[in-house]
Image 1 (cartoon, rainbow, N blue to C red):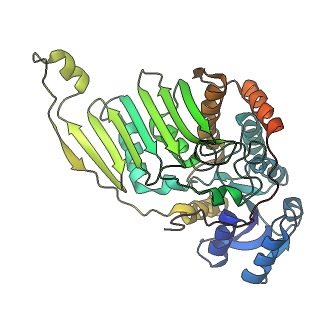
Image 2 (image 1 turned 120 degrees about the vertical axis):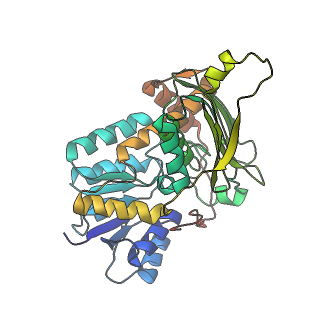
Image 3 (image 1 turned 180 degrees about the horizontal axis):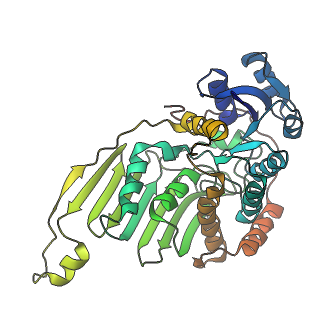
Length: 387
């Protein structure tokens, strides 16, 4: 195989951008062979904007059965990510899924099992893992050079969205259509990075405000408290209602404090392990000495295109993915635990009770309000796509 023939299922905001990048030849080892969408307007867009060689189908199943593709990129509403992934894997097709992996971990666990059995390449679009700042931050935390984790705080509130955004699709911001709000739509990247950098917590307690800033039924404001197996603690705060918002990640280790903000990574490096200093100092108000330094973060931030290029490389040459698809369950576990904690008003200990979560989710799906209409407007949600 010289090039991976890629099919894209779902060509809304994210899917159409992926189509443009692949069709333009920006992904080495990959060509756009087919697209599918249930909306006629999007199919018409594809016929008008994409090369004539790209086949256009009115359903994901038709694309999967076409024989035109070696792999698929799934960019549908969230509930359908595992559905199409499993169907593709059963046909021997390689799979790249947009985030999140799914809505509930029990379904995602089934998808992961099929991936393990099928022996196909399975990746997830965690493009923030290509950011050199986060890669370096993970390296410093995981190396152990600066001691154990003590505390992590992430305030990620620069997800501002208007009511028009939520009104743009009948599936958006509903329990039955999307399965959640800011945790499941905007924050899968941050929840993935949180566990990728610091590991999984042992327990979660969260307060989720549903429809606090918008006319929606799902959460748009969240504060969560995390406890880690070694006793470290964490706070995760997010919303789509703050203007201006903040994106500041602080990780405190025994011998350093790391701060990621504004695209830079700063570190306050202590001369001595704080735990040792605490019990050896004879002065009650003494502070361990140290200094702030700017951490070099070399490397290119390839984002979505880098994830797709690595996916093609894994298929053609067996090289490493940016994120294996099976890893998507970890960040989803965090969002599921936050939802469940809020619904039951108590701390949730991990591993998550997946049956209980699904039971509670289905209660909300049954009561989910059907939107009478939507604007049908497609928003470009990529931000700095390909940069």
